[in-house]
Image 1 (cartoon, rainbow, N blue to C red):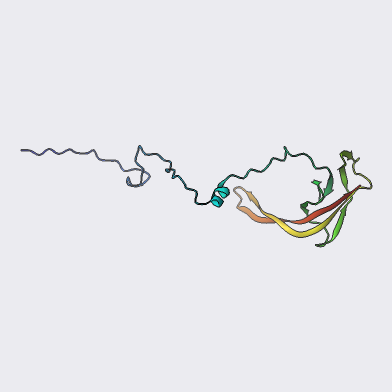
Image 2: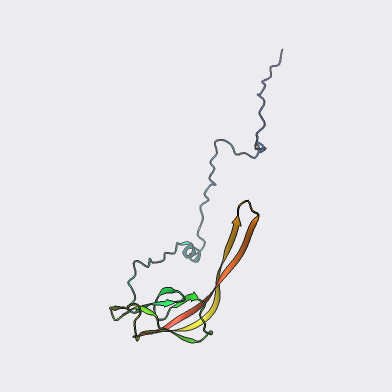
Length: 166
């Protein structure tokens, strides 16, 4: 009796050099299987619930606000809230007045200046001096071996608006 032997064709070597044992099976799903989770306590259930923030477009404008020019930018400010701007020449804890008020809304009446409003002051207290996030400044000239990498952090002042007086 002659024994018959089935010969498998030779497999070609793959260019990626990844062994066949590491490759996934051809008909398996690439997604990991989803394991159902079980809530152990009520606190864990409330932490996992998505927190939805209200859109600022759905909220009404505050009754009193001003648009001021500070640190080279225009800011929409309300009394009782804190803001950050470019570094101001004031000490921490100092009371400051912003005289460049572009617009004011008070008691439902909007007043717009040309360009500033006279006799309107926004008073604030300097809370702290801080630095902004780091920005990478990268300069290069191709084919000239010129590469410069430098970081920058903008110096900022944090202030809290105390009153808006008209």
